[in-house]
Length: 125
Length: 125
DNA sequence: CCTTGACTTAGAGCTAACTCCAGATGATAG
DNA sequence: CTATCATCTGGAGTTAGCTCTAAGTCAAGG
Image (cartoon, rainbow over all chains, first blue to last red):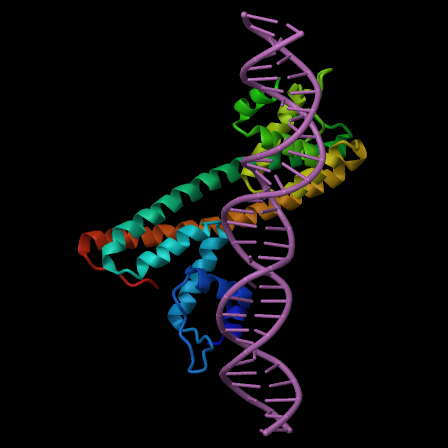
């Protein structure tokens, strides 16, 4: 697959795809004799993983390390697992913060909706 | 309250507190005759709101607008509500992404845990 | 009054994560 | 073969959100 195809498939810019490869967030992509990228199934799986992780805010640095560990073989399985567990912990914390903020937003929106009806803005604790 | 007290109370740097005020993310804080900040209850409530919203990733720009609208009085109530509704929508989308990533992480971690026991790393779909 | 430490401002610097650019090279249609 | 378009690389530029610095002012103890 060409970079244009992958770019469309995952809705990511070609610049981002090249950037992720350059910094080692995904392993090096196959090349044609001419030097053009030729993405395999596996490359695509990496791209998709990167996109998923990044969409949740997992930092690039952690993903680079994960990718590096993966390429070092089976003796890094425990390290990889620990890395993922750590990121999961941080993710859960972020989700907790967001849940609190969501409740706060719901409360405030509700207050504004009542104000639209009654004309009075209730006190915000 | 002095900036040091507020900084400790909300665990935010003094630089951040001054920055938020400067850019209009919170309304101007009261001053002593000498020009030092003297945070009131209301200032503190704004700080706390800012901290909460930022912890969930609500962009600074949206919060600046919200603060500006608030200072323009009751005729901006609808606009404020709409702003909050929009941010809530984005927040829910982000939470959805994070939920998917969390499931992905759980799956991968589980896979690594099984590998630790069996010595074989199962295939990753 | 003097020293010391907290506070002030304006503006520069920093980090993460892209995004863009220039100049060169590859691929393809006519 | 040539024109055109896609892709390549290295490196510069951008944005958000702080964070730090310098040079000066305020406040409190002795």
